[in-house]
Length: 111
Length: 113
Image 1 (cartoon, rainbow over the protein chains, first blue to last red):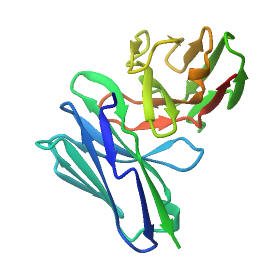
Image 2 (image 1 turned 90 degrees about the horizontal axis):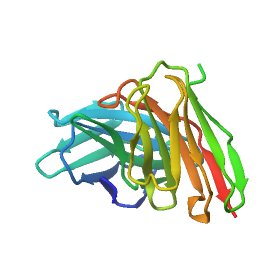
Image 3 (image 1 turned 90 degrees about the vertical axis):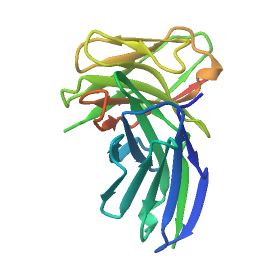
Image 4 (image 1 turned 60 degrees about the vertical axis):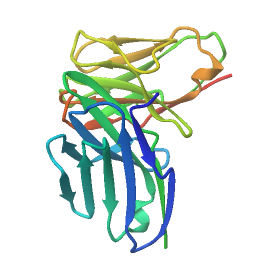
């Protein structure tokens, strides 16, 4: 089974609203990353948060990490139509070069 | 810069045929990965190579083999294709396997009939 599970599976919001999605993982991690995938394309890296960090910001993105709950959240503020995509979390562990992905959250931003 | 290049982009195979998916990166990255993506399943790791000369199994290695030909190239081989291997395959590379962002190719859409 996969390391990460995103919630919700799908999300539909109005342009200008915030989008929040969550990722839960099963085993201890070293780093957690978020990626975006536009339809029919490869994944693009958004942000990385290390296990000793609790929050990170990048532009309109805010990521939190709670290692005690084995969960992370990605917040996209003031969403735009161009944010319509699937979003995936990915984790790696100490001394392990595997990069494992969850099933993703599909976000639709309505104009 | 080309980044990560996968060939071919599309392929149709008959059950039992073999083929090799090619992947090359020009970023001098140490780690490379092969994933498959199926609807509702996200990306599942098939094989990865932490560095040149090493390969390891991921979550779903059965039916596949890999070769890390050199630092740039990491190929995925299907020896006897099955309909269950119909999927979109992505290759990725990263400077190191831990704590660095991965760069993805555009994918290979494979259909096995």
